Image 1 (cartoon, rainbow, N blue to C red):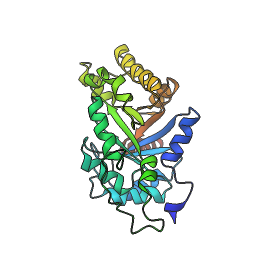
Image 2: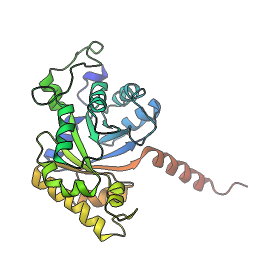
Image 3: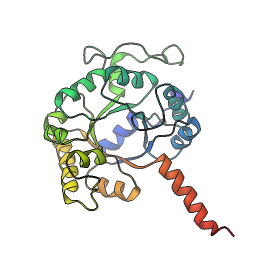
Length: 263
């Protein structure tokens, strides 16, 4: 069964890369199509993030999308819509390899995210494995499930930057993923990017340095390969390199350009 295969890329695959101080490169996925999900998961990227906050998918489609990802050898991360226990637990029960929790701006908010990811006594996750009675290997013991599930919190506000040292010190936080668009907006920089704003560079470097000091993984949403390689070179270790819609559009545009003008 695909669920039992050792080559499924999930939390263990990512941790192995980070143990060697290597970046994990991935794709952000916003489409609610299992065919697209399986296609993405069958490529050589290290991870994918299924986006339930700003993507087309909802919790109704999530189990099918995660099944499709696993059939393509990947156990993806899931960005939940908000820092709510029910959303985090639902993503975990559905089979996510990790959760990405948006708009975390305090140690208290980070601790709440962690609690929803871990079973007692480490946290407050409710027992109810969705696939426990379906898959041949059943439901893993709580301590195994806790160790397998990554918890990434997103720092996207000025308040989050101000609380960064406290956030990375929260036990159970595996990493901090920066949403650079919201961070720039929150800090009064509009839609500025690192390419034109030294202040954006300073903010992103601040997060990477704080993560390194706190012993957690620094991550960054990047919109293209050039940005991903640039920030991996500066220390980011969970790095998206594009969005599935953008990759699809770029591929079609390249095909149209190669065919030349329509006569």
